[in-house]
Image 1 (cartoon, rainbow, N blue to C red):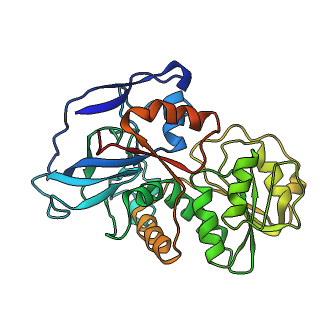
Image 2 (cartoon, rainbow, N blue to C red):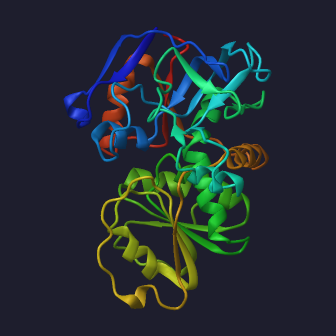
Length: 334
């Protein structure tokens, strides 16, 4: 099979990924082999490629927002069946026995394995999934809409739920990329006023088009304090700005898997019972709930479809901030 293989961690400009022939994997008893049709690109792919996250496996096939059709199944697998369409998300497997898994916090499992990080991912013609961790994709959800929801959408949804806000409240989003543009649509559908801080006129115009009540860069003054904020941008310098934007008792959620160092800040920014919480991945129930919410709220990703050979160019656009929405690598057509 053809696969994009990360041979070493390095900056995108040095092209550390290479298209090559790779051995097609064989499913173990509890696994399925999926013929990949589409795989959305996530900023986490870039963080792994460039070494912002420590290497867990090299060489490695990146990609963890995977849509495809079950080709074959392992000897213990009853569901899903060959021919069914499934999604393979970031959370690839957990042990199911640790204290976190027993409490329904499988995203915190110390032995968890992650797609496109601990095991090979979806920038290939075929990949493996654990049968009990793949996601059934509703028949009325196109591949291009479903793929971006499997990480950016689900992580954003977990972050959104942790804000605790309701209709009539105000939410500020920091950074406006693949995840934020989905959560803005969800929040607006639920009657929440959304402010967006981001860099670049094109991103801000896109946020306004999707229903943001106010848009501005990081130096602009909000119309009034927000009830909650979610930081999607991987820049720690935003944290003091976001805390200053909060009303008393507000919540700030950090949604990224990687963030640069947070600068020192005065205690006054945290006073008045403000809360800061990180989000560490997601679990299977998050994915199921968000897919249902996305359908009921008519959430649609802004998608830039690419051919399989376009992957390095897409990584470049992501790294340089020129990607609006989500890039989808359509592998089934290669």
